[in-house]
Length: 257
Image (cartoon, one colour):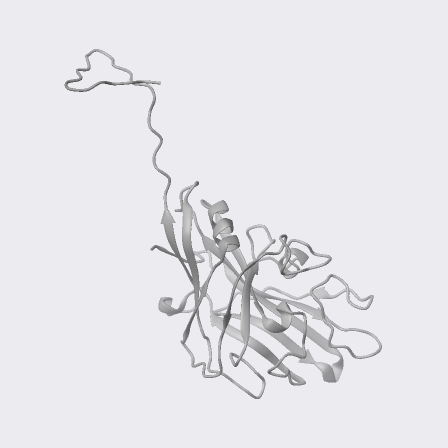
């Protein structure tokens, strides 16, 4: 079962989407392109030794932000036409669980399709994948490939595995020879609900999940995609050319169609 990494081009990172509504404070920062008539902005892309997926709740100044992790796995060595029998995304916790401003604590994360077109980019496609205007993670345009619960006792360097479903395996097969693009989203973001437990605090701090990225100095903690693959059988040649010699068949026959 070979492993695949984001590759030497450091194709992972995280991106942010913010919302600063006018008027009444609201926690309804949405995946959609517009919320309450206001257009969210798109923050810069971060390429560091860790990946964030979660939210910032700056309620005191009427400002909210969603952060999503992105990973592009290099599948250049996977042959076209391969069957993906199983696929597992393995990530390692960047920090211990924190309960005050919940990080890596009692949270679910989801792996969904990324519609950014083979890049970690600061565009609406990376923030609202595929169907920018009305993001719906359960729709076919933004497929869900799997989810994992972190639990309450997370320690730095703990490993977490997500077995991808049939939609994920199909996406990998279709991406053979190029890149398999995914987003990691927290349960707050996936369910579009800031009221989920553990309750978010009003603070200038990130709350959600943190994993090591490709840029970490310890290669043992870099994201990994493990695949069980059946490669297609080589095509049989239907033409035999004999130049300047002969072919002898003993004890059998040759049938060419």
